[in-house]
Image (spheres, rainbow, N blue to C red):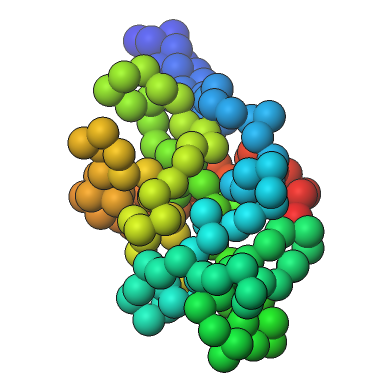
Length: 168
């Protein structure tokens, strides 16, 4: 009986340690920290300040601002000024990649979590932070995200830290 008890305790401790050290293979790790194209344009040219007004609107090149090598477009000078004064307030989380893609488990198609593109019109403000999501071909990851938002948010933040230990 004692050996069964010892075996059971050992098994529980081993499983607890295994659970703490999640083994995950991430997709697209070679992608840059920020989700930008060759032109270094953030969020496909959408005005990041407008998301906080619940609008997904494309900015204009004449109101652009270069912040840490990334180009942001704005609808007008007022929005550009808001960003220049407090850029970190408006920056999309997870480098502008799909929030659900960062935190998800392997999806129904076998894709692992990682850096995935976004639809700039699919977004959510949570705790005054901007989160962007993939929405194409019948896959709206914002809807999936919202089905268990608290857990998805926590998982995505943990995963992003693992992907970018000490970066930015």
